[in-house]
Image (cartoon, rainbow, N blue to C red; front, top):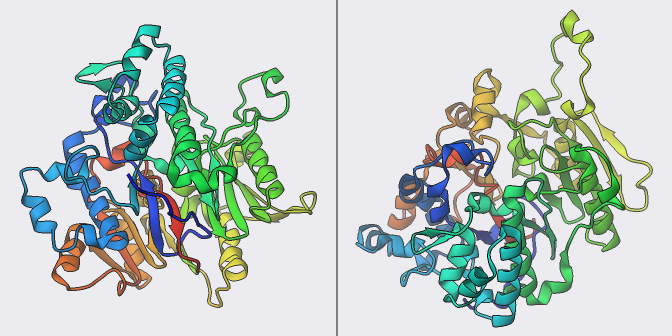
Length: 478
């Protein structure tokens, strides 16, 4: 796959998306069993065929119309009606789209596995991680690069399963994040994500796409003497996942301290980014350590420079009801509360604190992005219980901005869609929009203030939205 020359540049969450890294659902998702689902960080098992053909494929079509329209415009009917329809969407198939802007991770992996020295090192690393036999390692090294790439991801080849799948690889946001022209690699909190992290590391250091940026690939070190620290407290481990990192301006990033990203991991990342001169400001947001929230991008994402979608019950500055007497006697740990501290390079010892997430987002809109109008908050479930909690669980706040004001999310979050309409946004189904693009009824350039909704009965079972399912490689500057 000829991808050399692609520029890495991400300096906001809402600049027009020009290139991103995705991983289309592979056969490993169809092998998750109920007894292992939560070990593999899935909430439920999914119907792979429906998830692919009737849900994720719409996401991919929308991405192609926005980022690489020559590959799909005028060909939609042929793609949808062909007996080889899946070939367009699946890597390694003859008619695969092969976009240089909507970049498929499995294709990149096959590229580096075609190089014997890289193949041998990566296969040895995976076999050590998965405790494979020595002879099996030789067998893997003899496989064609494409078959080997598929096997390293799905765990199986020719119907034989060698090790567990890595179903979370569809959430490419978590393997690393582009900050300006640097790539910050993750350090996962869960064992289930170690193989995907290993694969990502080999990709970013070995693929020609990233050759010009090799010195800009940043690995977070463990905190000093971490292996001597007692106990299992997550905050003592150095962990960080991309869903907890947001690039809100060229000089400013947000890092969530969550169930998956530790305070130590956030601190080490900030020190590294300051040291390398990548940013000058970092805000750490400690959110409740609950599976409901997981990462900060499950609580809020940006829609426009003056507009955010948020979970009001956690993010809001609204006055909370007077607590009951019993609450006064409850010893709540600090990790169950939200805490926000902002650090500037050269003044780390003088952090600025924010009372709530909304105050922080308002400050970003006004001071980092120069918005001169009151900041708008669109609330999950239209800020009405129990819909706010229900729809946050199905990723109402986890939206991907294709350009400023145009975001893509799940169709099942009806009350959140209602809240978008009340704030002056159009809400359109992905299938209808695709037809309008194809028929010339509208085009991506003219689209403004729009929530695009994708079918999501199966996708939502995996507990991640389209913000999670994207690793932006290039966005235009605001």
